[in-house]
Image (tube, rainbow, N blue to C red):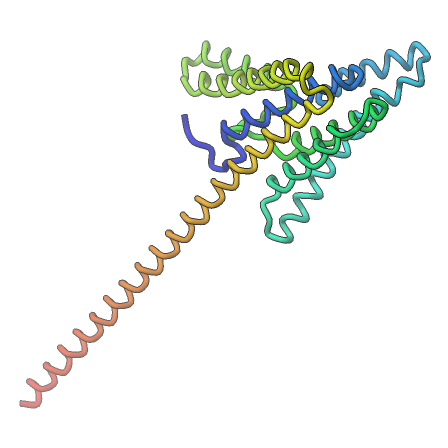
Length: 262
């Protein structure tokens, strides 16, 4: 399997993000009044049901997370533009914003579930927009239906072509789904002991994401510096060789002139 060109597209980052996504969804559903942090299709469905039944007081419960999710996508875009102007690593900055949002959610009481779910969905929107590729393939770390479709398509393509690259791609998608489920399992098991503080598990995974990308960034900087030094050495050697060649040519010219004078 080929390595990702960017660490943000790597298996390590995808696994950690999917674990975090599973924790967020389990938390919002089990702790914060049965609302989905990531699965906005489910929230829209429940919103429509309550509109139809006339339960308008519950519309905000499901409508606000959807709106917050959309705002999160826009926030990620703004983070990217601002970071580029200041030559910062925008995905690390986006993850840092996620960590701050989810940490705030952990300390909100149960009577602030609407705000807590909205902030969690805001963080999910940022994550969806910031991390959209895995080894060059489109994927998601906060929902599974797209990954399930793509993974199944890769399996079908392998059956048709027998190209092992399709097997590798399908494993990436199904592996991400497995990590998402694992995150939900971890979160649900920790709820009895941690209560509404369980969401703090998600920032732990996100901190690991930043560290992985930071380590890779340091390696890339070291690689770039070594490449520049090697290039400078080649230039220096070329200049020395050129100067030696010129000196040799001038010496030969002078020798020929002396022989001609004689």
